[in-house]
Structure formats: C-alpha cells, structure tokens
Amino acid sequence: MSMTVCVLASGSSGNSTYVSAGGTAILIDAGLSARELTRRLEGIGVLPQSISAVCLTHEHSDHTGGLKVLHRKYGWALYANSGTVDGVARNPDHVGLKWTVFATGSAFQIGALRLEPFTVSHDATDPVGFVVNHGEMRLGLVTDMGMATEVIRQRLTRCRVLVLEANHDENLLKNSKRPWPLIQRIQGRQGHLSNQHAAELIAHVAGDTLEVVYLAHLSSECNQPALALSTVAAHLKSRGLDRIRLEVCCQERASSIWSP
Ligand SMILES: [Zn+2]
Ligand SMILES: [Zn+2]
Image 1 (tube, rainbow, N blue to C red):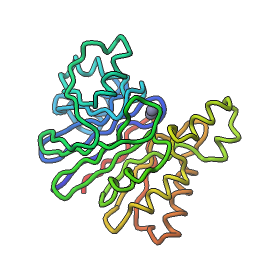
Image 2 (image 1 turned 180 degrees about the vertical axis):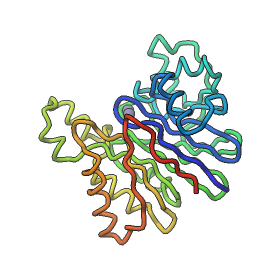
Image 3 (image 1 turned 60 degrees about the horizontal axis):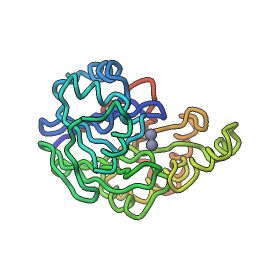
Image 4 (image 1 turned 30 degrees about the vertical axis):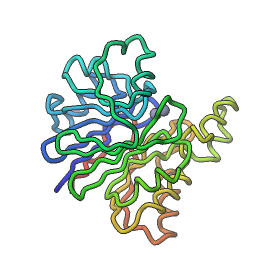
C-alpha cells in the first residue's frame, strides 16, 4: 500500500500539501494562488483535474488564499469543520462556497484515504491537524500550533511520515525587531511551534515506525533552514533517532516527493 506525499509550499505566505494513495488524490490546504499551485502540481507531474478534494486545517489566508479560484476552476470538493467554514466565510470572497463539513475528532473517508482530524491549539476558529491513512500507511500533518498537546502526541504516534511545524528559533524570535505583542502571540499557546519543541515532539512520537519528517512553516525572519535542521537533528541524535530523514520545506518550491 503506497502513498505519495509532497509539500508543495510551506511558510507564512502559503501552504499546501499533496497526498495521494489508492487512486485518490487530495490537498491539505490551498494557500497559494491558483496559478502557482497549478504550476507546482504540474511540476511534480500531477494534473490538477486528478485531485478530488481540499481539506482545510484552518481559515488563515496562508492556507486558503487560492481556494475560491481553484474550486471554481477544477471543481475540487471542499472539506472543513464548521468553525473553519465560518472563519473562511468571514472573507466576503468566500461566501457561497459549497462545503462538506467534518467533525473534529471523527474520522472520515475520501475515496481510498481515511482522514482523522484532531484539535490543535492556534489562534483560529477551530484549527485541526490531520492523520491521513491508507491501509497501514500513516501520514501525520500538523503546522500552526502553539504547543504540542497530549492529543497531538497521541495522534502522531505510529506515523511513517510527518509534516510538522518548526516555525522559529526561540532566540532569533526573542531578539527579532518584531513588536513585543507579535512575539508573544507567536510564542504563546495559540501561536507557532519552535524548532526545539518540534524536535521534542518528533522524538516523543517516533517509535520505530517514523522514517521521514518534513519540517514546515518556517518563519522567514525568525528561523533559518540550516538552524531548524541542526536543532532537530541534534535532538534526534541524542535520542538515538538519527535514522529519521529530515527535510526542510520552503516557500519558493515544492519538497522532494515521498513515495516509498
Ligand atoms: Zn499558517
Ligand atoms: Zn495559522
């Protein structure tokens, strides 16, 4: 049972991840312009018409920016929980979109994929992370979380691949020129996860199944790819987990394709 995963873009100005298995292809979030998202899909040999649905984690524009145009252009089904639907509809552009509403905490099926949405702590209406299952294959995807909660730790166990936020370096954030309230928001329980906290979460859930982690949603001002990588790698090494392959995702281009 194989699965294909590619992080098409990740960062504070646009997020989208491609997942396919058993003949079903979906996107988690669609925060790039329709033109750019189409270009990136074509870059990995995927026809936009082959995608059946977009599942949203939350309503922030870096996760929903291309939604309206893409939905109109390709007819993709839209999945979100009711809080996110309400949040998205606050943008007048998004009024009248047709949704399939899922309940956080209840698994649902899209073709060959089974999705488990679970609550995360972030300053949106009802933000979620997802585990996507196909047979024994299990992908965990969480960005935009202020802290690693017990629910997140439980859900991310037994995954073979993770797309996980490593938003900022704690020192770079504290010493940045950002206004103090914004620094507090990012550090807060409903903000974003630091490199160190991402490293601890990965070590906690790795077990003997985890093979690959895509480090995602890096801050452009308060993080550096090499720093995120070295912080996480050092922690995993100290836990005897250096078998896990790490890749840093970026805003400008798609990640490598994971397809075991
Ligand atoms: Zn975001
Ligand atoms: Zn967000």
